[in-house]
Length: 501
Ligand code: SF4
Ligand code: SF4
Image: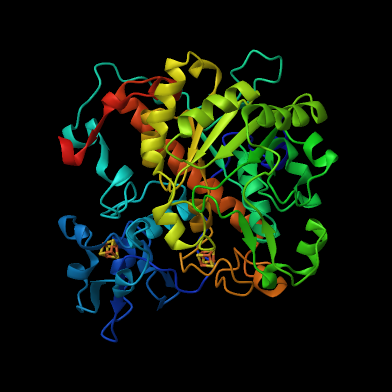
């Protein structure tokens, strides 16, 4: 029995449980208002298949309007607004949608991610859950079948479709670690997020047989039960890096740079450095902590190899991942990482990062991941080493469709982060760097704010999101007539760019 099966009684794939918002009024795309004309007849309760209307005894409850599918419901025979005998119901678009999110993480994407985290299912109605509105990159790419309704000649049985990928393709006698979904969680350190957030991500990773990453803030003891699903990170600050933390990891990641802020290193403001964070990082509470850029011990492939050899010596079973940002010569960096002995090259493009990364850096320094992936993929093919190197891509990957597009561009899988926080009801307010700034108790180290979120609730929300993604990935492969996600790698012929059709 795997560790996942011990914790999640029904084993793998994990059980999906409805996990509603922890707040009294969840945010949705529509508002359904019931006026005083309502006579509590309950007709709308029977009508709405989405559970918007509820009644306890003779009393109608406030509508759960965040589940309403909106005006597309007019085309059905269960449109409550028209069927109400007292004309007591009104439907409008939630005006908050105009203020929420941004071009990349639109209000629709936020709300659809919350929906998937609550139900584990693909959102119904007109909620956009595949793309944002940035006007470029993944938002301009489509799978051909999305435009043409193309059906494959032979549609594989859904159950036969594999979304699993191998993280070690070198024949170096190290374990052939496989994950069941083509994505894992990126580094978020203890200090940048709460311990509850880290544990929720770890539990979800275990349930789906994938990984999450400690980031560079040390390896809290509470994560040890999930050790088989944890990547530990070594970054320039070396915070909390110890022999035993490296020895218990199945994958160790060197972080050379972050795509959201290349050349800037890490910076944890003093008000997030609580006693617990300071203890973990062997620092002083209240003082800001810098993780400088770059590793001053690495200026060549030979130096890089010494680093990788160091980890391999300390842990003879671990795989080594190398996280780099996306400069114009990122293809050369990837080749260097291969010759240094890494198993995974993790390309981190611009647009990722939490609200703690400065916007000016996110939008202007690194190359967007959509350009970096094919550049590295093709270069590794030309060098004859693509089959041995795993490419994982991150930097603004928000949806199952983003993951599939990244793979079609040439990555083996994706590394995700913000979408997990959105599953925990992050509203993208951008206050992540501040100790008491996170209104949702996610990116905080404040003991009071941390209590806003309960661990099992958080884990289940991420598990549900992964379930919705998994079914979308299976559906994409089925529609392409592809049996395994591995066969989607580099299939740019499946994609079209809306500007060049
Ligand atoms: S409009 Fe349709 S989806 Fe919305 S509450 Fe009424 S019946 Fe439900
Ligand atoms: S809700 Fe919290 S995690 Fe989300 S952007 Fe705001 S501060 Fe950051």
